[in-house]
Length: 131
Image (cartoon, rainbow, N blue to C red; front, side, top):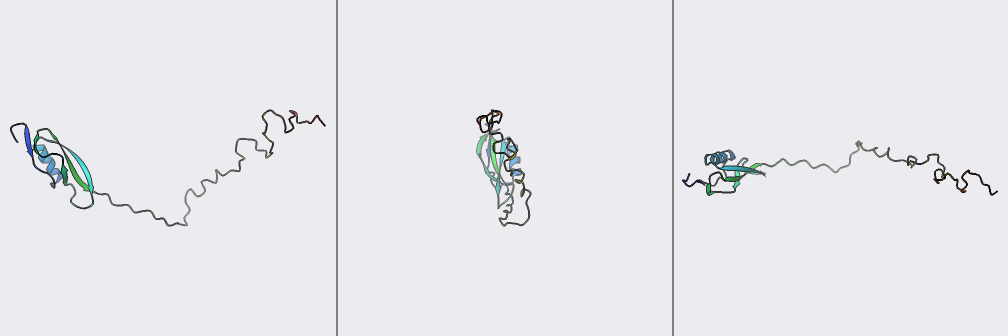
């Protein structure tokens, strides 16, 4: 440690992350760790650091530490199967012929056609008085 409130921080790259944390603690430095996935190489090793050299006591040093990359997942097959799926008949309940459309279900083409109570001739009583 230097007498000016500063410390000398060496390069920690390549050290075990726990060893690097111990060094930073001894120097009264703070640290923040970021993990980076690696496929090859040592796990739990310092890959990079944000500061080195003479730095003030209490400074936060950011360390990037290696972690194992996740195993690749198996890709789904695109081959069709003969096995039925759960949703094979899901739409059969929704396929209606229009009878449940909220109107008259008597089947008459004129049923519910007018809203004034008159039949197709315009006579409100359904009688044809002009005959």
